[in-house]
Amino acid sequence: MRPLFVHYGARVTFFIDAYPELGPDLRDKLRELADDGHDIEYHSTTHQNAEAYAADHGLAGYLADEIDPGLDAMRADGWDPQIFAYPYGARTPEVDAALLERFRFLRAIHSTCPS
Image (cartoon, rainbow, N blue to C red; front, top):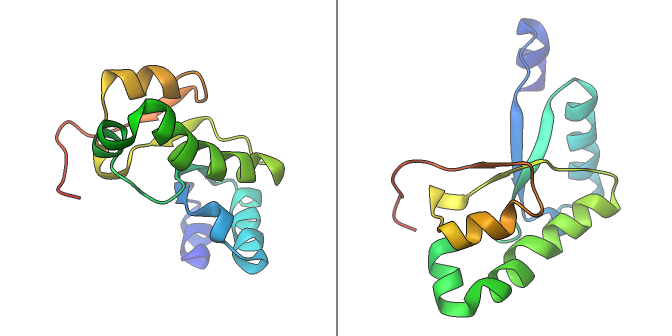
């Protein structure tokens, strides 16, 4: 879709999950999109439902498994994500508070989708 974005001068935000699994070619494509003026932000390591995962594994487990690995990998490659988008929009006040220590903004929806 990159040519379409260029044609219309559109700027979009891409929320990335599974970043550690992306190969060099896909990481280069993200860099091209960023160079075009698009935002590259964070969406989790393996796209788990935050509310359910934290309930089963604790808040520390959610952060250690779903947030830190992908975020650390992005930062190691020079990215500085400021926005986190919750997979499925699922969140809790406790997860919000913890993520606001890592991100400037959080994106969610008013109701959650089944995971």
